[in-house]
Length: 544
Image (cartoon, rainbow, N blue to C red; front, side, top):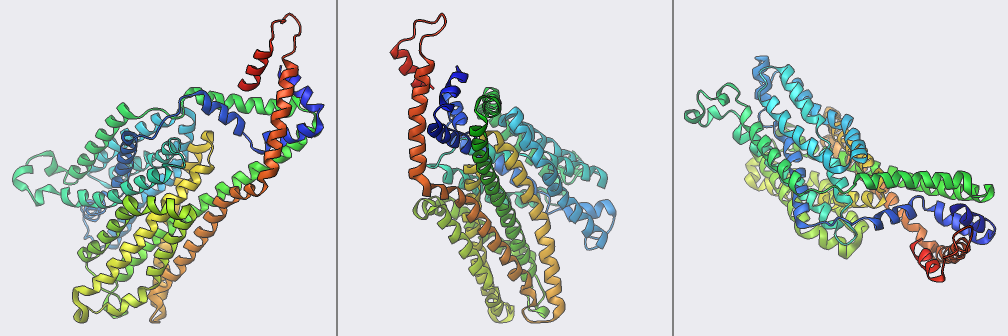
């Protein structure tokens, strides 16, 4: 049957040329449409969104859970003071081990989600996230602490797979709300992680009558990790009962079959001239698709690195002593300023981002986020005029809190937009793998950009110039400019094809007409089948 269709098409040069251009120029589009139509479409419900948000929240808490007590923990292992160089270096390695494992293993989890489905990978990652912190909390020496932290980083694939799962449920009507909700959970996790770690670590120091002689007396850092593990188990149970598979084995099988049919059609059934034309058009479309993914992936890399360095720059600069023009803020004051950033991120995701995304469009809201962040950041030398505590007192915190509030609000506009663009470009069979790679690239950027920024800060301070401490701020702003350029071109290149709407419409009309004639020719009586009727011919055309 398929051979007859191709024979008829190959005899119609004009229509065949449009057919191949339409079919191969949009690689996989027809097959994917048939696959999606043949199975019930999962929907983004409030329950599913809450489950995904809980999973994302758990992962975000896990990243910063140890920061309030890790210096004391390492100090007790090494029997050295917390300000010793060996302790400081070990703390940095222990914290960074999580990001290193995220870089190495996120692509693996994304690949597995394309092979075995999204739901199993999410549940395995959550189960591992419940076990690894307990091992870390039970550590009595550095090797066990490193093992627990590394195992925790190994089971870090949920962040990318969560976006993959969400990307298969949303459409243009709810994608802004879905991805902004994940960003909201991320902002809450940034606050809850250090809060849980700081409040529950070393319970003998704040409730000795309750915990004396218990397991928490022997393991002073077990309680925050055990509390987090209970939250992870709760999220795992919710996922078991409420999460459905969005990329089933049947869907994966059909994707493989569609690729095999497409390959067989291009290699054996179509005439050589027509096949070469189609393959050239298909190759051009594939190159354009891959270029867009590369642009968006590296745009998100620079965006992740920029905001990591942005936070690092701000904390380092406002903590500088007054002798070099800094604010000389204490840790509790820095925490107060940072809380305003978390508040801005939370409010922007709940109220501003969905509204602006509909009103201004995705590119418009991305521009607004970049402009807001860069504007308040480049004004840091102006904030420095209020750095003297003897003159301004607590009022010197106001411009810094304003900068954090507006800066994080801008970041809350940029990140969901980037992931919406990426999700629109991805095909089902590559969604998990690409999200895993992008998550890995983001973790790499978060590990590289802050040390580079601190190096630029030390270079700027060594020059002795009044504005030397702002070198990393100005240099980091270039990274946001690069991110904007990459994201804009990666998201807009696909839209350029709308300039050829009339030509594509003509091609599709010719294709539909030729396909109908071909199916009619194939449906004529032949061999022993003499029962074909005109109605069956019409149904065959409609079904095909």
